[in-house]
Length: 237
Image 1: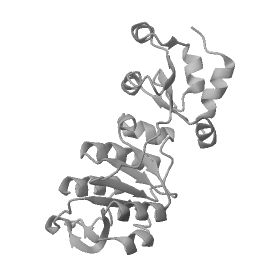
Image 2: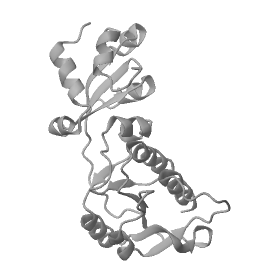
Image 3: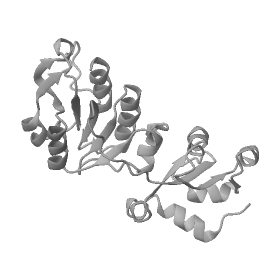
């Protein structure tokens, strides 16, 4: 089965945020991720592979490797690609555990945060105006499938803080002057703010915070990767 030049042009355009947002779609690649995408029929728009056995098994379009190379965002295309609608999530009512991504500019960090948050049972991730695009191909790849299950919402810092106060969520920020994480008694309902490695948590969140916590260090490293820090804190919470 072939793919038309118009389809190739359209799918290639989704590597850019502008065109993804115009059509409210995203692209996922890799056998495991595409297999998982096939379970979400309500979001699935197109699916392509260069693997004849996979094509026959799942009844998806079989295309040539040269065509896959044109629609893939990867230097070495894995041979499996799906186009899906961006899911529309609602802000959860009466949440107990949410993560706030503040100025996480690296798409890989954001995707890994989504995967980590799902592991620890976080109900939603809220990203602010300075954070990377949730549907950037690097973000999507780093989620390892969590993008299908982890509700992600976007809002301004003011909107996020207002939501936390409305839902009576304790706002927790990481700060070197904060309380030792391992001596901190987690509140019943919380919103953990994960800031950028270079700038830390924005002052708006610091001023609104209920508590500040820090991960004690035993070595001389200057800082932790933002997502690794998030995993350590979430494990304790």
